[in-house]
Length: 265
Image (cartoon, rainbow, N blue to C red; front, side, top):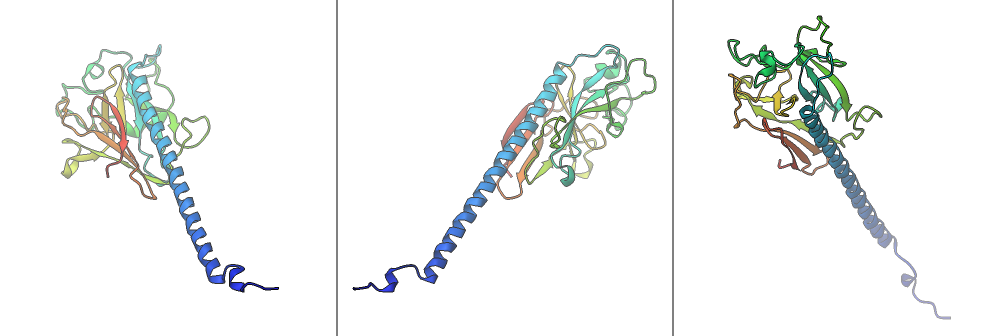
């Protein structure tokens, strides 16, 4: 019986190695593409949750009603002091800004800027129009009969982004960096005239947005308490570590308008 040459009966070792290499490359490319897709999905979910949280806090501030026997509330805000840190990446809190006044009527509650007395010499300062960032604590606003709390205070009430059930939004960001933008500030901007925003406050009823640095100093208002529409908007950038542009959330100066776009950096 006639037998064909063995070269037609199977692959050579070199051919097998080439095929296996091609399969390995394709599998690696598919896995990388899958990982990038998962990262994009999680980043979009986190960005959407952060956007909705910001919008909700602003909406709640505009619809805020003073509870019976509680002190006046300047507004609701978002604490972003932990959002950039690797160990707490993506975490942020909502808070109430409680005044030490029992009701609306004092000059600091009627002012165009929360907690600001235009009659005080020097205008906006670390003591006038400032957010009491160092005195943040838990709980609701003080009772009108509480004489111990003689200064405004922040009361945290929701933690977002930590992945724990029952504490807010459970979606953590993927492996990424989160950058808080700086805004122009002629008062507390240092030599470059800019300062990084760490707190956003939405004023009760009006929903206007005010930006503060880590020390609670007001950044987007002139020293005399007037509004400057030319101040920069506040931008939060969320960038994946594995490449890609990511997303950015812009919160517009004073108006508090929120816009989500592809990152341009």
